[in-house]
Image 1 (tube, helix red, strand yellow):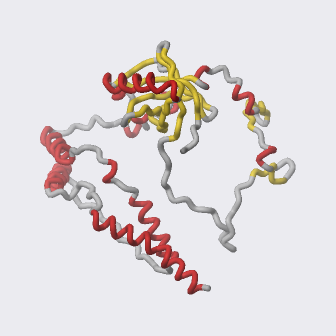
Image 2 (cartoon, one colour):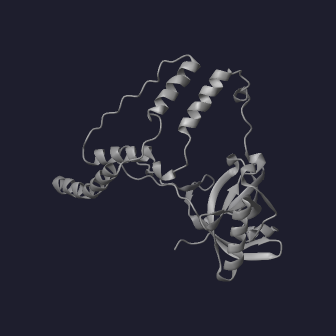
Image 3 (cartoon, one colour):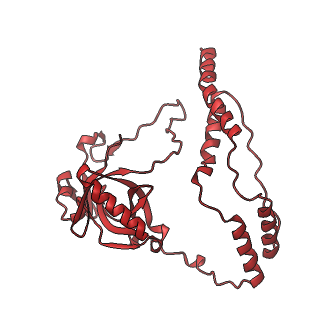
Length: 291
């Protein structure tokens, strides 16, 4: 069972729901270590004090806010506990809004909310009410040494909390990107709408995969087995300078099913599973041969 990162209460009106907060997402990126080019040794990240010219252990590190050049206010862990914020342990739903009113640019990170035993009934009540009314609760929560705006919404039989950026954390659109008042003809608009209608579909996240990560694994496995992969030739975009011609060509391709992402077939998936099972054995043989 994962460890909760925050324990507190959700409140709306006079109703209180004790809950635990769990991270709902994780990155699956392939990570790399930094190595010394000469010997291949793994490099260490160290905290170096230029005053004493020595490496500092974590126990001797403290946080400081620079209020003037070279002048700091030192903050201890106990100072953060003294913050005069109700959101430290309470998520007070101050408003309920239509989820469509929150632009996706505001969403930051998703967390699961799990009710404590005595909060199961009011938790279920809030979840059902939000679902039936198609609403999202807006609140504030203090986690990770920061008070954040948050949205609470139902999802697949549970409640999730989404941390949101504050308006002043959203960068303004660059001036050069705002010139979108170009005139388009009725024919171009109808053709673009026809193309969109052909590609309209339900969102099926299971049909998408991180192809970059899979390709990176392929390269890593090839290097482990002493193989040399040849870089694929980059595809060239079609030489179409007329917008209407490009739209017509796109519509024709969509009608033939050539522009939708293809889901992986079962046979291909089975081949990948077999390949995954065989790789450790091939690696052991290679190590044994080297020894």
